[in-house]
Length: 160
Image (cartoon, rainbow, N blue to C red; front, side, top):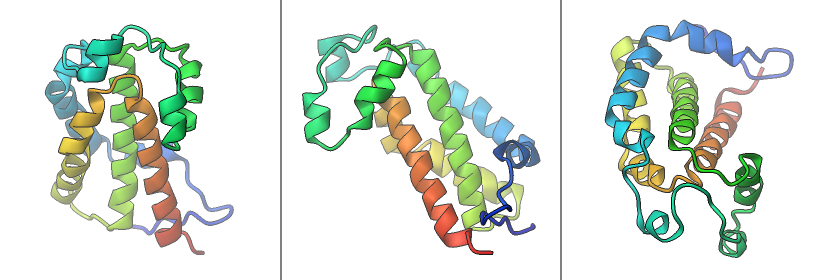
């Protein structure tokens, strides 16, 4: 496997990298769709969902701001507060798949089996499944996960 350089003028397009792993990503996406199917319909929920509903997130963001989660408000306003489980879970799964590709590069995963196993650990961890029950912020949290993995990839594999 060629090393990927994330340095200046050497950043590859993510689309090229995703195309390189069509088989692994296809398998992981199909299995993720099956495993997370109850989430697509908004059928699995948590206490917040029962209290505030899963159609629209209308609460103020004082609690999230106090916890340091400042971008939740902005990302929620981006979708006008509406909670559409298929869209949120779909975006979250895509962000996790892109994170898996970066993790494959960080750990130099060579074989298909390695990549599928590492991707499964990322996508099917209990913390991810629990986060998916918080529909109003699942996509925001998966974006932050992706950005954290991207930062690690830039630090670890970033040099020239």
